[in-house]
Length: 265
Length: 345
Image 1 (spheres, rainbow over the protein chains, first blue to last red):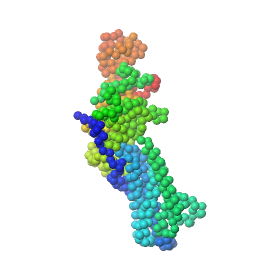
Image 2 (cartoon, chains in turn orange, brown):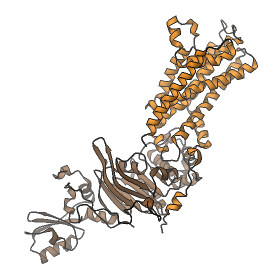
Image 3 (cartoon, rainbow over the protein chains, first blue to last red):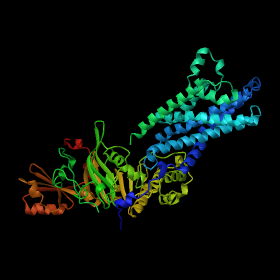
Image 4 (cartoon, rainbow over the protein chains, first blue to last red):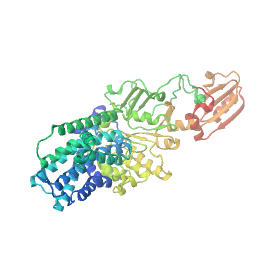
């Protein structure tokens, strides 16, 4: 016969700690991201190919750039491009999950929206790290980039941390765009921002008006900062202001959309 | 144990249910007895699985759910039966805490929906969506299982849903029926006390539908409370102990499936009987509902012979006719649009 549970028995059921955050989910999320061919091509293959195309040109590759050569400078740019794509796409995947009704499904589990976002952020960080690693390994294998051994490690870490500025940007896009095509849209935006930040072409080659405009784009500050260990010299406060301001703007946007999304409860 | 069948009639609305009017004694009746009528959160015993009081949901000017009162005890298997757009999904969304009521109260196992969900006490199989195409069946179940505090047996849930052999298949490559079974497996993971299914067999073929229901029924036999929404009368009849008929956001009938079936499948005795009053006709043996139109009386009954015999021998009724209609037709009459029957709202 059926047995009924008393109120005390029912409320004695445990609630998971940390809002339902689990390493199993993190592991599955990373596996998912690496399984996504488009993400892997965007974040790992494209920047490596860009380095091979632009970073080995005999016309300028061996010219000096601060404490290393131009090839090393381009290596850092491409690693930044790849890891920024990686961190952005991690957050932007939320858009796809919303379209597929997955976030709604998760609301029928103990997973808190915050734990979900934290999982996404951590997933992005892992992919960002893999991206930096891939580009640096390709660069190292070509023997072209030249900089001191410690600079390889320092710049790689700087790129990885710098790319985190874009993790909330991905979240913002993920919550803002209802489309399943968010990845194509994001890829296009990132190319524009990469040009604006001087990742593909040195800003000094732009007309003056564009140079001024470029200093306000989101990748400018981060790009200058991650190159700084290599280029040396005086640090421009504007770089920090640019990076922090964009981080604040993206975070505010993500929080705003996130609140709006979870308010439907 | 389902409560005695009652009919809740709208106050001002004349419906196609008009002919059943004899059954609802008062203008407005509810199924809740005085004890259950209290807020179950204050109750120290076994709280009801679902408790809705005066629940309403509006979308702009559309009233999707109108003042619904409903109590489902633990262990019941209840069908929420009604046509598309009757308010079934809107009601379920509120029971699951996916949307906020415009008015009234919801309690699930004596707590708010969010509390019950955090403890894994309630789970649901939704109609569509809610799956990631790029995960495999097994990974999806593993993902869901890891979110709950109590460790869940993933292989066992997949077995019980009948999808253990496709655990390595990508969700995007699964058929609609397989995806639905995966949703069912996911819903079993937390070992919930209450399982809610929203039109779970939409898009399945007859065979798939039968197999799916046999899994559910097998599971319900272990004492789990099950609430499912459907617009198929046969499904409600075959798998539920109790049927709650919903129409235009209101509960129009609530009883055992046998009661609803006899109501829907009975016959109507029509006769001319001048001077008949509702009160007099209520004593006709076997009458389920009575309608008087001038000199004509219409009596709906599961035992039309008995009614006819009584009318012909004990009253002055003449010109007697007995008509029947199909189950489906009767169900449509119960839940259909009153514009078709010339009633007003």
